[in-house]
Image (cartoon, rainbow, N blue to C red; front, top):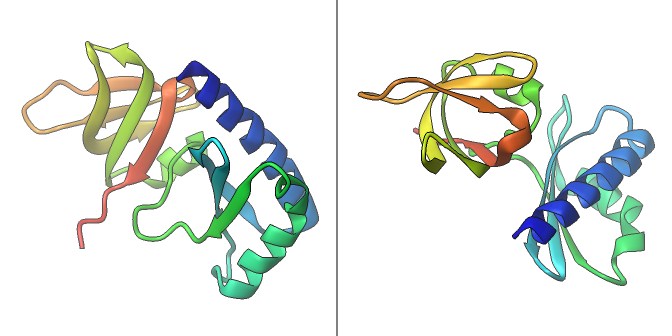
Length: 147
C-alpha cells in the first residue's frame, strides 16, 4: 500500500507542475491512482470545468499514455480535499477522510471540519471528541454530498 501512495504522490507532483504551468487558472485538486495502469486527475477552474478543458488537460498529459490510461474530471459534488486550502474551504462541511496511519486507533473518519490550520485540521463527529488530523497523513479526503 505504501508503494501505491508513493506512486500517487509522485504522479500528483508531476501532474500539478505540468497542468498548472501549461494551463493558467486550472487547479489540480487531486490525482488518484485508480489501478496500476490508470489514474484520474480532478481539476477545477474559476469559470467551471467542461469537456473542452478536460481535453486540454488530457493533451498536456499525453506523455503518460504509454504507461497509464488517464481520466480527467471535474471535482463533482463530493469534491476531493488534499491541500490545506481545500480543508480551509470546507470548514463547516461534512467530510470523509482516510489516513495512512492510525489516529486514535482509526484510519477512517467522517465528520465536520471544525478548523483548518497550516499543518492539520480538526474534525468533529457527533458524540465524539474532535480529532486533529495532520495533512501529511491524509490519503483521501472528500466532501460528503448531503443534497
